[in-house]
Image 1 (spheres, rainbow, N blue to C red):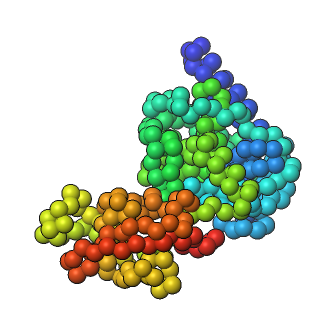
Image 2 (image 1 turned 60 degrees about the horizontal axis):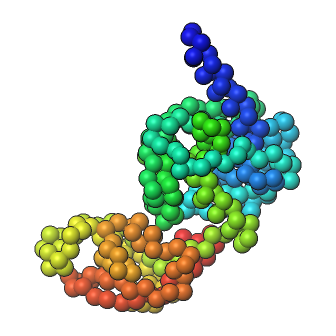
Image 3 (image 1 turned 180 degrees about the vertical axis):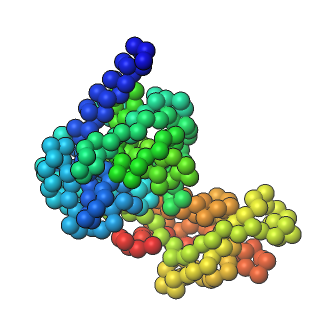
Length: 304
């Protein structure tokens, strides 16, 4: 083996050990675990979708001790959950400036198993987008997709760059292939909000939506470039949209002056700052375009 490869191998092992000092295993069942990152002293961040219950949560610390942790809050839109554990006192490596990350950059995903210790996966950054929204509305800025396969025990682990800093939390949740790094800026925002209020405020319309392809004749009559829209398939009678007169079968084509071609286009307009505002909505019913306004409500914690 060449000297260069040996040096690279040793460097990767060192960085894994260094990062692992701030990584815990999160377990809620008799078998299996995911990972969590000690983001701040006493505060652990993990992948929300891997945390299958809110109580009887335990973590395995880097020194091997198994201790309880309490759920502070969840945010499914960013796939982040925050735990409190006073025994988790050593945060992960310094947070890196994610703006230096480019496609082709090497990254390590570092996690921890409950029995075997640290786990690591080496890969590259495959895509960096200035901003992209998850399919349930959260904005990730930047959006960093990873060409790396992570085993279930490493989900929720730290994404470490070539400088040894953490650029975010690893999850496969919003990637068709591989995984993404939920950027540190998003992690900090969610941690601060959950520590303050226990949940992330999010706008709410009280409808179920499904993408639909518009008939060509209808699209031409509307003078619309977008070929798709969002059809209402469920309405809560006392919800904001129901009170505004929206019914099942309506096709939403514009929301707050933004054209709707996907369900995500509606979710993108339901950030916390939209709560309480009256939003102009254009929809099609019976082949005729109509206008209404909906006062955006706040989604109940744990609601849909």
